[in-house]
Amino acid sequence: MLEDEPSGWWTKRGGVATFRRLGKVISRIDMRGSLPENLRDVLPRAELDVEAALEKVRPICEDVRHRGAAAVRELTARFDGVETASARVPEEEIGRALAELDPKVRAALEESIRRARKVHRDQRRTDTTTEVVPGGTVTERWVPVERVGLYVPGGRAVYPSSVVMNVVPAQEAGVGSLAVTSPAQREFGGLPHPTILAACALLGVDEVYNAGGAQAVAMFAYGTEECAPVAMVTGPGNIWVAAAKRLLKGRIGIDSEAGPTEIAILADATADPAHVAADLISQAEHDVIAAAVLVTDSVELAEAVERELPGQVAATKHGDRIAEALGGRQSGIVLVSGLEDGLKVVDAYAAEHLEIHTADAAAVAARVRNAGAIFVGTYAPVSLGDYLAGSNHVLPTGGCACHSSGLSVQTFLRGIHVVDYTREALAQAAAHVSVLADAEDLPAHGAAIRARFAEGELSELSSWEVPNT
Image (cartoon, rainbow, N blue to C red; front, side):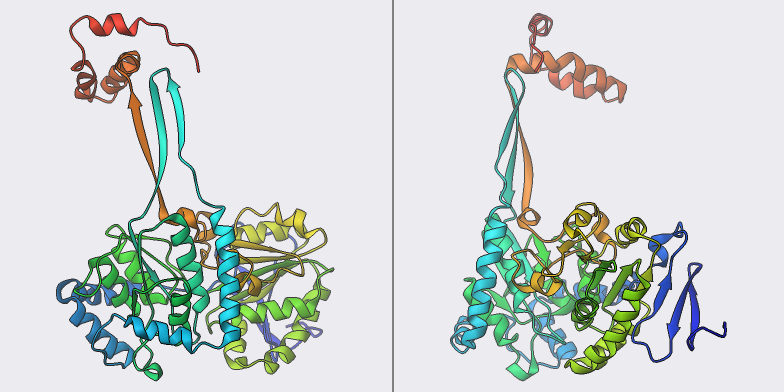
């Protein structure tokens, strides 16, 4: 250690040095100079070994498959410590939860629903018909998934907002049958949290279950005496939920395997350190393995944020949890040489949530390619998106934003191509089909075309001239 360095220690990950300071809430990673080639591998990231969890959830899912509702009840008692007579929540309990809901919470949920519905309604797709040749059309028809199961987490926090984010796009897509499940809570008599039930009531959802974890996903996938099977399961959850979704993918469609929540902030010297610190803290509040990463080319901003964090963490309710998340290897301040390198870093990180705190933030945001959702400037923090922006907060984590999207109306729609050709239009395609079929050594494909025409007729019909379109 050099004499003028503050006290602390260095660690290395993928050849990149990280300096962890004594008494500091968050570590620094110095990438000034040249960025490493293995950028995605060396950035701070929560480690979530879903593969290792697969074998643990496999017997749980098999138990539900073979024993149905009895298995769900027994697993709920085993994992949640709650004895229940049925996984299905009585409709009167859903109505009671709404009747007893704090009026302020009800008003906030109603506004959240209104804004989310406005945004998601505009995501609806329309059928498109293309005339490929005269007499030959292909229509892309958008059809909603017939039945979906929506998972709402329970545990350290209650998430009625996740009810809104799951249910609204499914409803706007036109899903005909949907069910919500959320873990049983001992303090609420084995029911899901009453605010979750109230949110369901506000959205008109009366099919709710008090199951969580892998057994809830299996219940949806295989069906039980109480719950009809679904075609798709969406919604975030813990590692056991993610593992069950991976295991059962194929039998059911899934949105994603949700990992720990994460925020990345790209900021320059114009950023307000108090705002940046507050936004890092807001996501670290979710879980001790939540990731919070600041990417900046300003040492002064980095130092100012470091000064801000201890006081803000100490002043918040879940300070211990937040301090553990910020101090973990999944969080850090990444120093870069300039904005161009900063953009490369955040694109490699592909954050679930990305905030832009720079001069001309909108222009910078427009250059980002990989993020679940982008929050532009001082007045669009991630916490707005969590509740009331109108956007969806069920977003890809773990770097999956480089290839996947967040939950939307499209999640619940299937594009079906409808092919409609006349006899004459088929004749025009026959020769090309036969050539390609022979090239792939699949001659029966060509024969299937020729079987529709009398001998000599195909030659006559295919001589008709087809205009270019």
